[in-house]
Length: 414
Image (cartoon, rainbow, N blue to C red):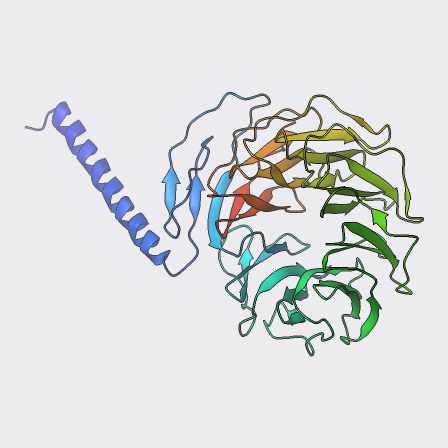
């Protein structure tokens, strides 16, 4: 006769068997992960552990007590990608990575490969960027720059020739008509995307150009380089605006226009951030003092009212009121290493920071309080962050040559 205890034991054995069969399927999927991108999924409030290099791993849920506690983001994948080289399509549905000369595209929701990879191998990729309509990918590499059709994976037109040596940075103008490139040959160049025609060559540097950034209206191009200056150029004429901006001590680490284009922020090896009037090239008020050590990263909030800056010496992040030029609240503490990358969410509620300590942290832009747990999983420095236009997903890339995709808290608490 079957007793109640026997029925419970049988039920338990059935559940255990089901779990074992499920585990077997997960193990098989992990083996498939040797050939396909691995997916790391975290349930509940768990903080993801570092994923194995290729295999999938699931993490048990746990809770964390933190100010403005919100469900911790879920790590969806760790796809192969060269350190820090990622691009997010403007619609937020696809992102691109570069690894070992191959540029691949991935679905931002599923973390799976989508569309074609760029045909052939590209030696020494340094920078990739989608055009504003998402139809083109610009690739800066050791042997110059090229434009690719993101839908077909084929080269769009001929390579953009002219640079001598590697191209370190590429950027599309806001209308997509122009693409700017920065080269080790000491020049920045503007090209017409439709024809590949060279429009302007901007020279005058004593060393390599490492960064090109368009103003929001596309009329001004900022370039930074190894001569420790930032230069402003009119894109219509290719002529400089004023004298080179003396950024301060050492190499220029960050250059950013405010969303309305009225301010340009620069940082360098010193401990100050300088604000400039891009239209004239003149300083816009006194430098923002108070940082400790090199300022590796800075970013404006979507409404332009806040400027976030990292502080390499004390490993903190500071928020500034751009109208008063004064700090807001106390520095944001928690990282155990300098912060190399920062982004505000498109809705302005969150600030994401990536550090040399291998973690990513989320902060309330309104209060400066941490949101949820630190996001772990990268092994080594986190060098790049991207947030989808709907503020629901975060991409992180680091020195471990992995790109991780996170689901941000619903409502972006704070």
